[in-house]
View 1: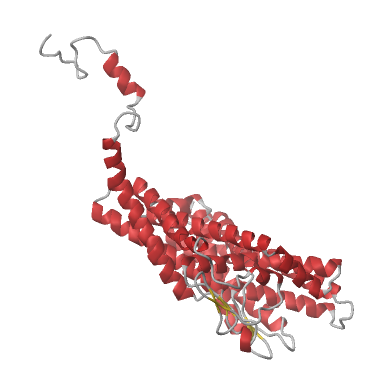
View 2: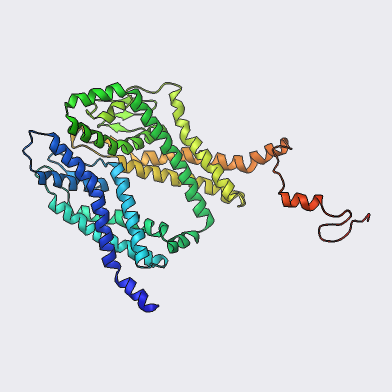
Length: 421
């Protein structure tokens, strides 16, 4: 038994190296497709295909959050669809490695994630060195640190969620921690779902402007396909911008600009199809009701939390409801940090929402809704049930009803007889 455990532990570096390499290859593939399509679309280009491959490697680093140094400023606007795919691949790598090496306990899963992070960070530094272009470069040491950090976090989550031993560790956490996490997941999912719907509605309404921007590029079939793929990979980024819009602080499309529900200050918007859907005027009175969506998401999360944690003391339940708002704000603020970036220096040095503003606004609105939802479920719902007895009262289980209806006359459930008998 101990011999098998030693052999499994000895194979951690090799298994982690294979998993990290496979995660990198799987994530580079879509970036390589985009770069080669752009290269093929430009028939007048004299750039060799190797430079297109290097650009794909640099784009892969960009999707992790590594800024690309340009001749003027930096390019650091992450394609969040590729980022999500990278995180999923790293989570799979962590789960696969943990199962292969029979990781046990927090220490075993952490060692697995660290092994993947070391290999992945080294791979990021190597790609940054190899992918240098005259006008586009990534800093190798920064690439190593960023990629190692992303790999550590995602592979650890994957190892915990993707193995039986990891799920046992998570099940050992206090119930209030698990319930706060799940309720915050409900709130964040509701906000992002509403943001995605708003993004699609705005794109549909602005379809004519989007088509005009696409026509202005005068691309062929291959170039049009490449531009469409580029829009798809940046669609989740615009969804996070919409989340900042409905939570209150809004976002920027250039230095000194603001796009919010009650205020819009815009300069020249970049000629990119998705940006044609950006609002150019403040929302009307009806549309300002969008600001209530985070409160409603918090309300749903608070009711869910109260139902799962309703037996707790009042103080603990209310503190847990506030923790739901704080955790939701932190998650949405982190998403806003990923969606914030720049396209060089000058007017386009500021794109996207400010993370701290989104975190604070989201925590306040979702926290207020969560607290209200928990209070409603704890006090208002029972009061309403007492006011309207009958159909609204819970029905007793059938077994309990039968035990009362069919017991012999004069006999109690514990076997004793009634006083009258």
